[in-house]
Length: 125
Image 1 (cartoon, rainbow, N blue to C red):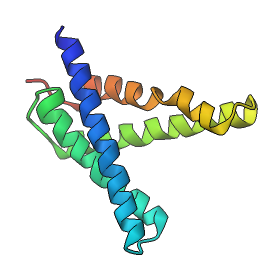
Image 2 (spheres, one colour):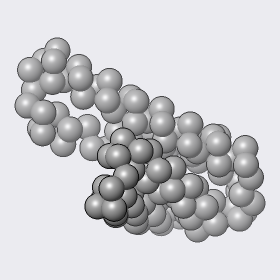
Image 3 (cartoon, rainbow, N blue to C red):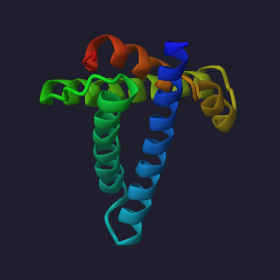
């Protein structure tokens, strides 16, 4: 039961971070920041907030470190890269529709970041 609660907290933080990313990206674009810079800043802010929330609430470690934060950013970046690679493979290699392919891959990034985060990033209470 404890692992299910942990997964639920992970999902809630992930949803909050997705909204934070989209809101930050949109705000940046609306005020005239170039869209790629907006995306980069929004990623860094939402992933950093996610690290803090996961450390304190999801995994209940409460001992954030710069090393842990950098590992989390790397895990997020690697999971996003894996998603892009698989997306290109499905779309260009297997002729799956672009939207359907991304829909199929939706669980990839959260699954990868959960496993990596739990094992290598976050401290334990």
